[in-house]
Image 1 (tube, rainbow, N blue to C red):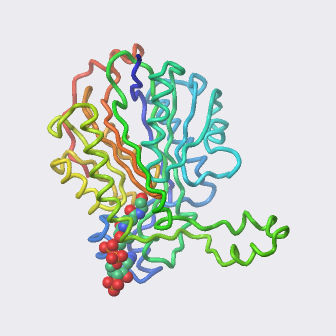
Image 2 (tube, rainbow, N blue to C red; image 1 turned 90 degrees about the horizontal axis):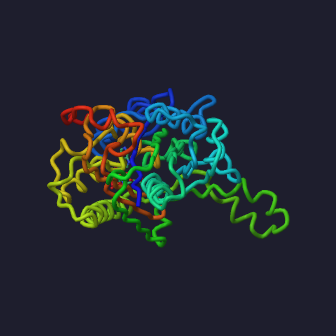
Length: 355
Ligand code: UT7
């Protein structure tokens, strides 16, 4: 049975940067509070013509270039997003059109846990032998649903996209274990009501529903403390389970790539895995929480910095709205993928210190 090696990776970020100092002018908050409670200093937010489509396609192009593939060589595109540009057409179809690709295209919805979930779905098409080359994109533009008068949420989120290319190999590379979980009863702790505009027409037919929807805000609502408690538990438990599933111990883990939601949550997960800080990739200071884009952006950064050597064991773990969580162990590298034979035997770079 083939494995699904990650042969390309890339990111795309909006041009506009919103700093903590900018937020100080908008709501009652301070750089000191935000940094000490979350670790975030700035985040990128969409403006102008930027969208989930433009960012997703940008990350995809970078990943394809790294893999040395043309978009036309892809068999399938799987996109993780909670913020598609269209609610009928999948985000994957919009990105496929931008890329000029063909083949299958569909979305996976698991909010911030979306990329790891999509990676597990996409990998199975490769390991099952159905497809050879699959693109996985994690993209979100959640700032479109943020109330910039709500200091409990507006300080946390940024926009962005990350993508990886999966290719078949006979060597044990790519996603080796998956842990998915959800507690649907927790949906009320993090959600975007925002149904108002979509029921406008049906409300004409069913007038009694109009009043209910009219009261709903279009902005994200979050019970930060509840999500925080859940996150610490879910990240730790699922990461431990993902490592155990492949018969490894924590000593065998070379890098933890956690969802970048809050530095305190990341630190708690690292403690559960008994990992020193240099084995935990952290970039939340520059990007905030980019939802489904968070893990692939961090993964691409770590790879570009030479921190992931051929054969390295990398733990991915994420949690978010649903409430849902996902974890997995990835064995890094391109061994066995013929087109990448030279790359696989390149000398290994020393571990970089995460930012
Ligand atoms: O992908 C999943 C997305 N969501 C998350 O990961 C969220 C997880 N939760 C968190 O990260 C944290 O709960 C927050 C960062 C949202 C909040 O941090 P906290 O340490 O849990 O603060 P808190 O909600 O317990 O609030 C403590 C105090 C409150 O004041 P009082 O009641 O003690 O007087 C808040 O009103 O901090 C106040 N506060 C703020 N102060 C300055 C809340 N937000 C802010 C702010 N600036 N932005």
